[in-house]
Image 1 (tube, rainbow, N blue to C red):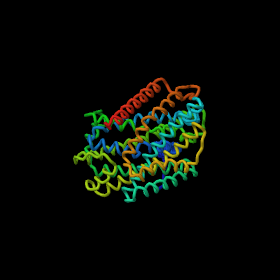
Image 2 (image 1 turned 60 degrees about the horizontal axis):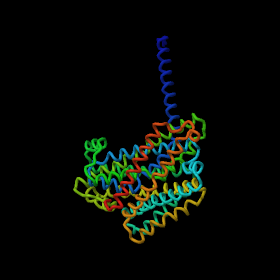
Image 3 (image 1 turned 90 degrees about the horizontal axis):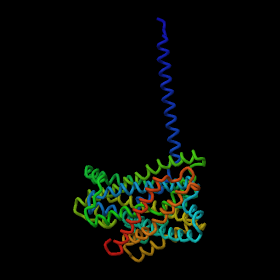
Image 4 (image 1 turned 180 degrees about the vertical axis):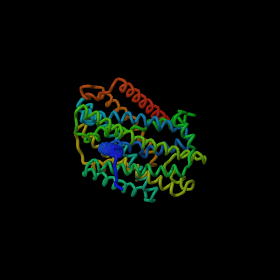
Length: 435
């Protein structure tokens, strides 16, 4: 019997071939788009470290242990503000081809820039102090290394990570992203062990609630210390080498990709911060424990959830301290070079910023007290980069096609004013002894 092929069979085969070709082309396009996106990912992951630094641990744990799930909404709004400001910083860098300190040097007088630099350096050192102490405390809690030796070891590890910059910015981004992943995985483990009430989590994420004056204080602390001055400056630098296309079309595409980068990285930071509050509420509040210090939280987790939980907490704190310390050091270099055109080797600068933390540890001063003082310093400094950024980003002659629209300027001023007012409240409560 002869094989016969009808015209219908040929049509079906052609249709299948066409469908397969179309699917292959779609797959190749998606693969190409993914590769292109991966080329732009990184800067936001580096700056997101500032939003999961050791300072956040203290306020989030305190909020969850004292007020259950009630303050999760503060984390959500803090994250939205952070996304707005980091997007504006990235946009400024993409539009001008310069970082924020460099643009300040072009726009403002030399004497003003020296003042800006001094203020920014104080902020960078205050941030570095908190982050260095966090890494030290992480080593101490995990491996029971005496604080002074843990401090020296933290400094050494940070030196090594900073040295990786000689292999390019991508090397630093990979290291920081791995450390952020460690923090995220640690808190996924914590959430799994804590077994929170997800209905209550959902309700309090959406509905704002402040039950009393102490809740207001903690909420202000959580929101007021969220946006770090050094990463506003640093983000505008990190986006510089991601695209070589300086045309309007190229800049718009670069900004679009950076917004995706920011959305992914900042929402990971949101999940980690929310997890801190949720775990604290599910474990400490449920057992009637008000926790005020990181050490107390670590010690309390072991009998309540086991050694895996306390170990995960220690790893998260260590990764947070090391990664944020590296970012603080590198941001300091951008600040110094941009405002006043000074350049000091990163490791020398790291040694200088390590000294205050080592002195505090050697004198036996409570690390949490030093942490609070550093947040107070940052409260004074935060308005500077926000106002500088809003001033520059509204000028079409500097920003071109990416100039801030009126609606963006309105929200920028509203956010800046809100942060300044909240920080003023935090400072007032701190200095009147109510903090």
